[in-house]
Length: 201
Ligand code: AMP
Image 1 (tube, rainbow, N blue to C red):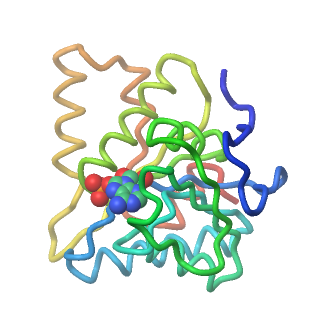
Image 2: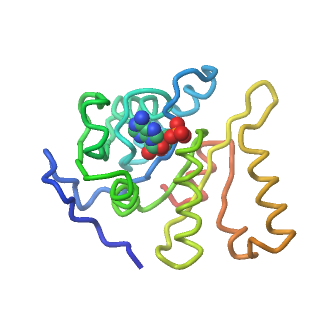
């Protein structure tokens, strides 16, 4: 089990509070997606903050990442961004967030998850898929017991995550994904219901 809070390898400007319950949010950094995705990310950040939970995420100001952080901040929530040294200078984190510096991308992913109690992926690309599947794998092998959810977004009748759900079902039918692994993935397009399912209350 690696549920313990991490010791950042560089001194953060502000220490992450040990008491806040947090959702780690993985989501797209791209800003070229239809507005419905940004609205969904903002609704998610807002709902998490209104439930008294903090958000930990990649510290980026753009795309869905920025939308989640801005909405959570606007609703009075605590937002922690985890920024690797290799991205410092390339990225400007949003104002008003708590920032943790870590040496590299791998430390960053481990730190983000260690700081959180619940894992959620919103729509995103390779980075989001990497982060989601890493956490499904960690959970499947017993490295932690954090609930894992996926917020779906339906744009003009088209679900973003339906192809992923179909693929996981396929992998389960063939036998590469176990029953227990299949049961780990909670996908919902309703923010409140997803948060309820994951225990973010
Ligand atoms: P993607 O889904 O490919 O847009 O990647 C977004 C995810 O990967 C986020 O959850 C971040 O943790 C990480 N990530 C990818 N690109 C960046 C970036 N430019 N700045 C910060 N985080 C990023």
